[in-house]
Length: 131
Image (tube, helix red, strand yellow):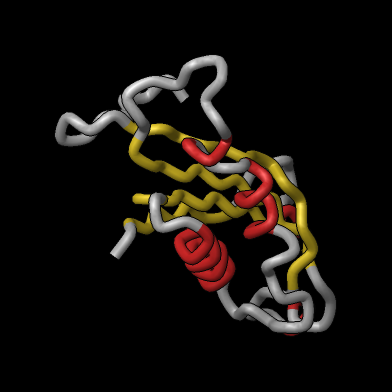
């Protein structure tokens, strides 16, 4: 979180929602395609930051974190099978970009909890830039 948030001299605001667990139909193996499996999802969304956030700055100058959580939970179809978790990440990214035109970049980390054998984290991180 302490990483550099400026790019080309533009101040950035990084919003984060981490470690949300959801059940999603995903996978390529026969044992994965019948039942939803648990995924741990984290999202980071970057947007340009205003000059300053004062104590009375309204939420409309930022973004509601719950919108990010919604993209990771309720906005994901529960009745659709995603062959790859990369497709899950793209669905989340598309939802966030559609929610708010101010979002410039999103990073989605997905960990497949069901395939861990010794507590390792197996999954992906996808970064998408606004097009």
